[in-house]
Amino acid sequence: MRPSIHLISTGKQTFSELTETVSAVQQEVDFLHIREKHRSAAEIFDGIQQVTEAGFPRDRIIVNDRADVAFVAGCFGVQLTHHSLPVAQVKQTFPGLNVGKSVHSLKEAIDAEQEGADFLLYGNIYPTASKPGKAGEELNSLREIIRHVGCPVVAIGGITPERAGGVIHAGAQGIAVMSGILQAEDLGEAAQAYRKEIDGGRML
Image (cartoon, one colour):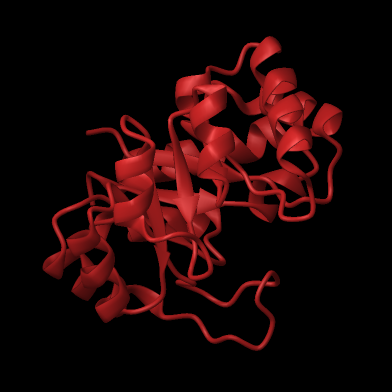
């Protein structure tokens, strides 16, 4: 299976700006995570409408925390965090919605899979500006989690293009990126660099 790139919104752009960004990298990015903690359900729904009207498919959009919005908008799935509803409850209430869970340890990963999570977002792999002062887990912990769970694991945290291939070679199904693309001078070039490296990571 081709490794995936998950682009996560930062909450610092307007949806118009995010739509422009997504349009520039759509060919390289597999999934868009709408991570807008400060916005209401109505605002997130409207933002999804903007993004999809610009040509990004709904079945490649994942909404952070808001399973209700993801379900109503017909998106691919929802990304749950430690403060979200339980995985099992979300899957029961919103059938057909792919449910991801953010985890930070082997125990959390095993628990999330047992609850029925369809995929895991694990990190942070390397130090990242989005979590100052938090050391990266590096690749050994990633490998350990992948050995113990059967569902896909997407790695997040400080993953530069230079590190991306190694992350995929360690067994991750994909990588999640925020500033590495969204704050790049050339968005398309940055996305292409990640794509080249993760596709090459399968061959290492």
